Image (cartoon, rainbow over all chains, first blue to last red; front, side, top):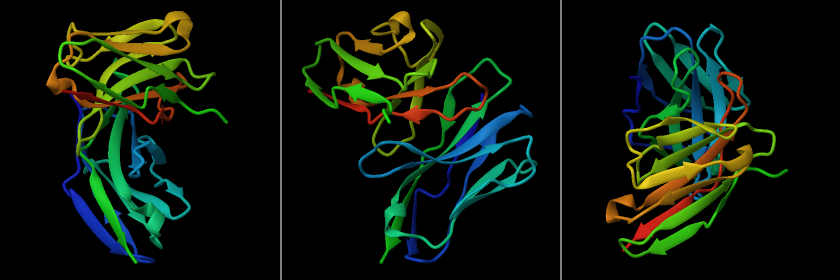
Length: 116
Length: 114
């Protein structure tokens, strides 16, 4: 079974600065997808960014980018020019595209605080 | 733009009572998922439907839990004989069936069992 580990329960960043959230995962599969989701205090989960494992190029979405290291099974999220609205719980998630399981497997989350 | 909706948003019940939650997915999405999230943790998978067929159930889904998705549209999750350990946020998500497609989450139903 796949596992996802987020080793930073809490992180803080100064407004306008850059922060990196870490995520590692364990899998024996070669084909899968990785996601970062954001859950603000209102608690509705919002997709931040998506990465296909077969793509070597790191995904980017405006101020959000990932560092995907497939051999190391690492998938970190970089937030540039942090804004107050970025404050939320961030979850890393794994989705198998080749196995029978069709659910997302989530990490335990990183609570990000943005300091004004 | 109608996203995933869930009702009720909050439910307080006494131990031993039955509760039912409803999820309305995005209309063109044929996959529907239920997750459970406890405070400070990531969501844990409970079950998922492809159209009206329930294709997978987690070990977390004890025999007190049942889910349906009649006609492949909305879904209901029922918990019978609730226990205090059932207190959690119950999240619904939907997606298209292509591999790796994003799951869109609803706002959740917070259940408190007293």
